[in-house]
Image (tube, rainbow, N blue to C red; front, side, top):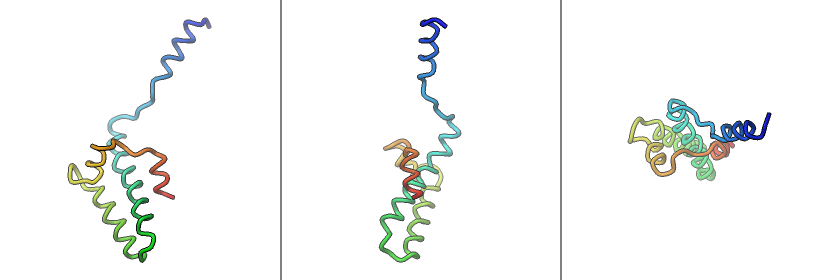
Length: 92
């Protein structure tokens, strides 16, 4: 393999792997739900379990609403999509 063909292989492999639009449309509300759910759980840590669960359910339902009524829609307009690491922190 000569240097020219090696450099062409390396430049082709530098393109980022991006999921399809269907996968992004499914992952976006899911990642926002995980991230916001973790934030609500952390912010309500001093409250009773019943209040904490109620707040978590309300936020998750708000994220699950379709279209522009969803919390994920507004957050997506401002910040695009949360990272996988922030969603993983929401699970912890």
